[in-house]
Image (cartoon, rainbow, N blue to C red):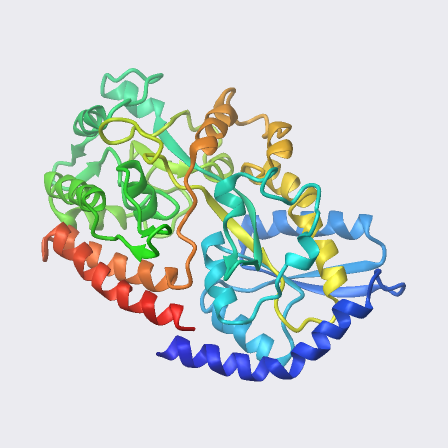
Length: 439
């Protein structure tokens, strides 16, 4: 109800500026002759903010009539901040955002500019040249409101040092879920007080979009676009969550496993880099993180096994971030110039320094990752990217994620069955989805 009220409020406020926006878009066929300053919001901080600044500086050097000022805005409360800025007429000209699946929910709030007029007949930014899982993001009611920005899929990383210590072949990853369980048993270790000292893998904690990624490799999904129905409590999803419940129970229960998971706090050298987590299902950006905080860490990469018999549906999620143009800005043409550059030349720079895939097929084939990335790693990520499935991209995705996390936590703590947990989510989001479709 709160989000619906906010949406109506924003729509009322922004009506007063929409006419002005349309006039600007129609009457400014070319870039202004005077230098235009654009504000660019980004949620990335730390080392990634430095990378973003490097990219913005490159744009400014090559575009003398436009100056882009980067502003770091925390992701906490990001949607509300953007809604408020649009309503106040002080929105950024362009913004990146965490999770491309968030673009459609933002569009549903009525605070984004449609990109369809800009994308018409674009030779690079079209569904033929962009990986399907990336192109299909940011679409709301048939219009494109955002573009995926840098991304890729997840693969299994493992510590070669730890594998050697327990007698596993450091050059061979588990190839089936049976082997994944066997490896985890061999890698598990407790200290002299009976507490977890090392674990094989934390399946819910080490990937972008934990539930979608894990449910996907079991062949599940959250939503069926053909029927326009949610399918949270499908047999595949229940089986995936039950596998996690069994895993947690096997290694001491939720309290013990979760305490172990939080044992290092917010230290840069995390469980995987410290040798306390032996395998991790992770996106490629993590490779640059590893290099910064543990440059000598020896690791291997391989596709995560799928559960049971392989099929096209059993593939990991394509994870990407997004880039958007808020509604009501004064310089949409210049904003598009910057935005388009960011998802072409800028994305290539971003992909190469942060260690990501470029989402344009032609650019990705020419990509060069840093020398510290071992030979063959880029190819492994590329191979997985070709079959990666798109993340859920519907207006209620944040509502679904919150409810899923809460109910899954109950299941992992044996407070309810995996089946009941997902039935609870299904019932809740079915109602939310029907309400969302009413506008």
